[in-house]
Image (cartoon, rainbow, N blue to C red; front, side):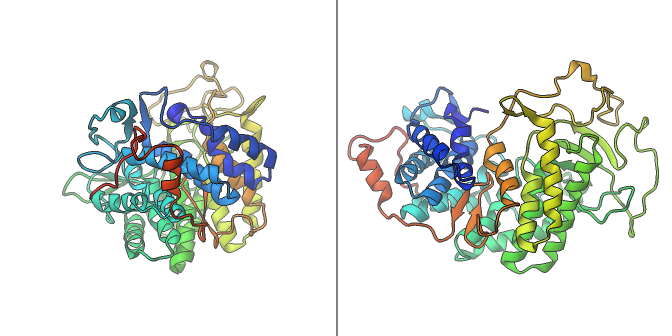
Length: 467
């Protein structure tokens, strides 16, 4: 996705370049990214979620690491753009911001959106307020959680920690960390949410070796009925091992560390179960429905072309996602278990071998195929002919450099680099300094410099929203 056409990968990679010590590349990228104009886009609609985590988060992290005020001013510019997306009758931000209509003064209404889109402003907005002293950003990030009434119990329809919801729960914990526990609501909501996650979403997969692992499924229920667990494993949900590990440390919940380790091991098992050594985007696992768990060699699919323990694969692609290595990184930093580095190195070598191209890395179309043979991808007798597939897709999302490569690098680095006691990591892997540089009045100075106030306002500049 282009996310506004503002050189997403360039901006999203800024703090990664600094962490890797590529100073000249960072200097060049800073010069290019600070010349971008966020008051105009060639796209009619802008993803507010993507703009927040990729652009605002990246500029804030690059500023925290470098101290370059030009990057802070770009963060303010993006923050002002995003504030305009909150200028709706409900004060909930639109998911797709029609910037030309907003610039002309048209009122936009919040339509369909997801929990992740609504609940993932608190970290970036709070940190922007921390470094500038300008509070409307933090207030928007905080009050949106109250307005959405983010449920701390599993709802009566469908809920998971995969796409469309993941970062909202993650940000309850990380915003608590960012504000040093000063706002009790974040901790209270996180504890209630994880209690519900443990009760309704965790399950032990059935595997041939009876591994003591866990996975996260989807809770599905009609209104008024008891939720039923759907054993759908999304690669996106593999971040939860890192979240539970961090929560165990920050909130002193020892039992969550055990859950974190088993969740991470569950994703490692899924990587190893498939013939190419990487897990697909979405699969369905067998549930171990008795304790102790004992494997039974039952006929899970008619031709046994899927690995034992896998019922179906509904999206066989590998999209270079960071969630599995992210959890390994958190667990290694928190436990010091060097065996996790060995696992990470094997993962990196396999991913690099499979996805490397002449000009970078690319997504894989189907991780269930190998040696030129078609593989069954679900339990409904549908087949994929690999001769009609392109095994390497011409796609590379910016999170590959913002997150995946960053976590692979940091798990082998000294703990002082990106220390978890000094930095909080956003859902896009951007580092925010816990004891940040504060520059009160930076927003006013930015506005005055660019003549965006006192008669020459930006088309997106809005007054503090009245909640």
